[in-house]
Length: 146
Picture 1 (cartoon, rainbow, N blue to C red):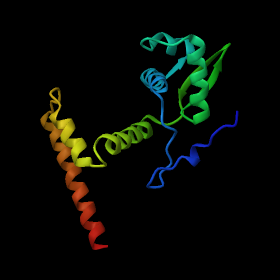
Picture 2: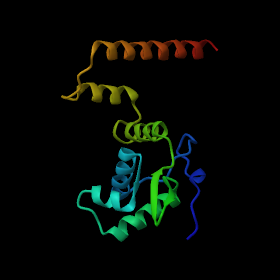
Picture 3: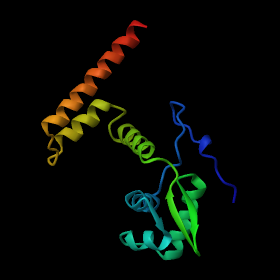
């Protein structure tokens, strides 16, 4: 099977993104991200209503071909880890969430987060958020005058 290059996956803005994930692939990635690294057996044991062990191994191979995971050998076992940094994966996930569910509106994402019934912000968090907003305003002003 020919490996696909992640470089070929560009969104509308020209940003390179990894292939979209199926539900099962997302479940596997969730386990790997949560633990940092995991064997196929560990992944299989953690997935709710898991498919067969051989299916999990196949999906890990597919995820590796897509560029989402990499592996190292530990005896006879392969230990899988995310190919991208946690920060890069979080940015990609947030961008996809914003574009898919909020029509590309950052304001609607923030509003949605603040309206969650379990969102409780402390004073320090509110101050940091206010500072980020102020910095974004200053950057916008600088860009407008350039």
